[in-house]
Image 1: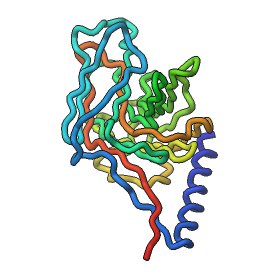
Image 2: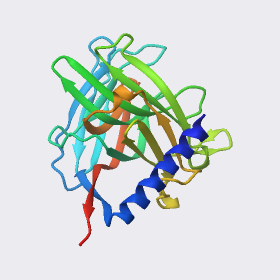
Image 3: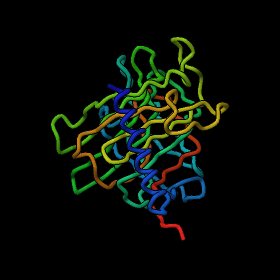
Image 4: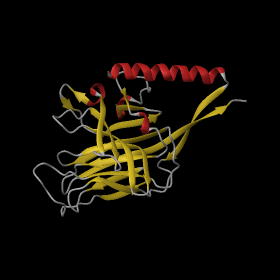
Length: 252
């Protein structure tokens, strides 16, 4: 099934590119947040263990998410998860979020990216692309949606395996990992690579994959990041944090 989604995404991309060329147009990336931006971030807990909190320490294009030692420790691991985004950025339909996952401390730590983050009164929605934490298969990127107006408000929609860049046999390669995710229409495309590889193309079969969402997940929101399951005293480190959209411009 993943292959059919990936083929469809590539076909759509080729058709769009040819149409733009024929019309004398081009797609231009518009950066929404990067290392030049003021490091002001908002967060929303999508699940929480009691009154546990995560502390955010943002820098220029970087972030450290820390779980205080006063948080509740359980044998099953922390069930606190948070979505993080720059509140001053523009709401867009088509968008991209990227980060380098530099380091982490603690078992079960889950890094991720967020897309179409949106609050409408008491209703909160977000698409999350997160590193798998089950059975050691950390090279798998799971795609979730969260909607507080829905029961259950957490759902899984599929996954993309990035075994080629992020696994050595059946063992995850050490960080840093660079991961990007795009929302375009009802498709979420994920790309991952190791820093020493250089950035691959969005249609590279060894470094990308696509998951389709239900049609009601096509709406404007903000792009950001995600962190979850951080045990007391644990941390997540991110760098090269960047969000963007793109627009079509006419040449001439």
